[in-house]
Image 1: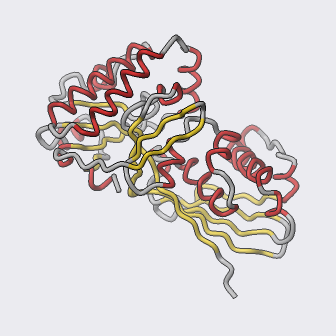
Image 2: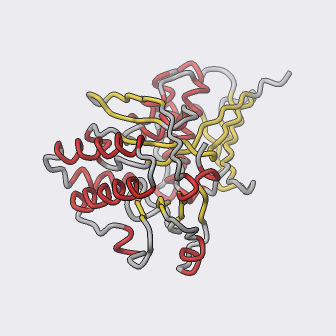
Length: 305
C-alpha cells in the first residue's frame, strides 16, 4: 500500500508594492510557472528523514530530525542555519496541528523546479506545502516563522495574477486577469545575486516614516497598471513607482545603478538589489543584458502562469 502524499505550490514575483505592501498598499503579484513539490511517505521510526532537491535533481540539503527536536524547537549550531529554519517552521506547524508528531515518522522530499538562488519562493512554497499537508493556515505559519507580508503565500495558492493587500494586518487576496497587450515586450532578468528579503524588510522597518501618502500612490499605480494596455503608459507607471521607492529607501534605482544606458524600463521586484528585475522594452533586450554578463533572461510567458 502506497501512502505517499504529494503537494505543490507556485513561486512568486511581486510586480508592484514591494516594501509598502507591509503598510497596506495594494500590490500586484504574479504566480510563476516554477514552484516546489513536497512528497511525504510514512516510516515506522519517530523521526523525519528530510531531503531537498534542486531543479537539476541535485541534493542540496539533507537532515534527520527526531520528533523531540521539533516539539522543543531545538536550536542547532549556528552553521546549521537551514536546519534551524526548518525546525522552526515544523515547530510552528506542530503548534497548529500537534497530531502529526504522534505515531509514525516520515520521509520527506522537496523538489524545486527553479534554481533555488533565483529567489522565486523556496521558503514560501515550502511553508504552503507543509500547511496543505497538515491542513493548517499557511499565512499564520509564515507569520510565526519567517514573517513578511504573505503575498508569496497567496501566489503559492493561486494560478492567476492577484491583487494582494494587508487590511488590519490580515491578508486580502483578489484574483484578477492580467493579460497586457504588450506582454511580448516584458522580460525578467536575473541579477546573479540572491537577495534576502528578511534583511531588506528590516531596513525598511528601521526607516519607517509616515508612509500613508506613498502607500496610496503605490496603490493607485497598481490599479492603473492592471488596466494600462499600452507599453508607454505602463513604462511610465513603473518608472514612477521606482522613483517613489527610491526616495523612501534612499537607494538608487536598479536602472541608475546598473543599466543607465538601457533604452527601456527596468524595475526592481521584491527586495531591492537582487533576484529578478522586470524589463519593458520595445526591442528584444537579450543581447544588451548578455553583453553586461546577465545570462538568465526569461520572456513573460516563460516565467508567468
